[in-house]
Length: 160
Length: 182
Image (cartoon, rainbow over all chains, first blue to last red; front, side, top):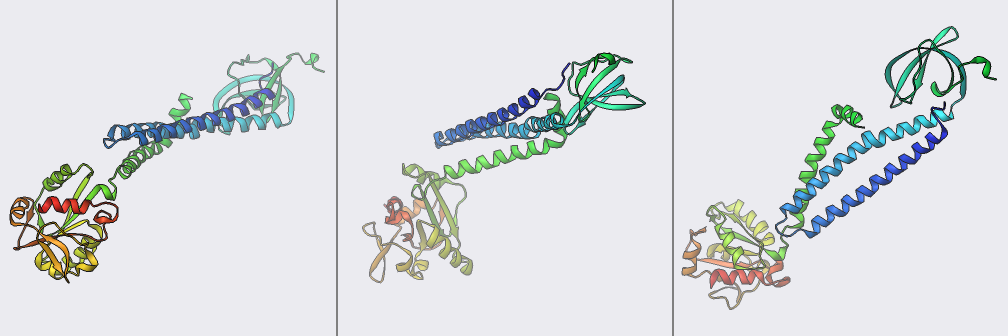
């Protein structure tokens, strides 16, 4: 079962561009709205000023959220996708031992799985939430940059 | 996303607070500047003496003229010689539209360099054979005494030559003086 595909990387890049375009559109709408309120204001300008203040606070808060959370996360996700899909492919058989507490690696939260590979325990990372593993079962693990990208056949003989 | 936002709050709350304050302050300043009266929409009066408290005169003057959005009064006490002279020359001659001074102060002023010619307004104040100001009539002085402290016998009103309202862009200074003295 493929867990990470190149299409995921392409989709991540596309989403990053879409987010940026969305922000620019919202910024243009904000500027237009703010200027409209200013130029429409009369000598009794308090309601227009309050409108501009509210609009500006909303846009400023959205901007902070966008650049520190939403877009920032997407950038990190893209970076991780590029790193994973560009890394050397490794195929190993491993017996699933346990799942540990999640870690944030390069800005992205990942599931941490411990597999017994040959004589040692190895920590591998998983991006998908829906993949499940049975304790003690052997899996063919295809990894790139220590991230499980594919779970293959469990029977060694079937792998050529 | 909600979780990531909540997780970011402990480190980012100050930014949210600062931008909120900045938005309020900047827009208040911007609207104030945008809607501030133009030079031709306001009259600034310099009075040599003490102005009685409250803004009664300013409010009354603003109602008299449709085009006036603001009337303000600066004052300085002639008894405080050095401080008065400095304020008279900086505020009175360059930042005001109309100047009201006692006759003694007018006599010590070079009207040619400071004030515009004023004619047909009433009893003229003449210096070097040119009418630069007009005396405030006694009955008008009594009316104005509710707003200004008149400590000397006679007072003169002038239109500041450098003002845009003294014939430059408008004649609002002259209209204002006419309202005071007639």
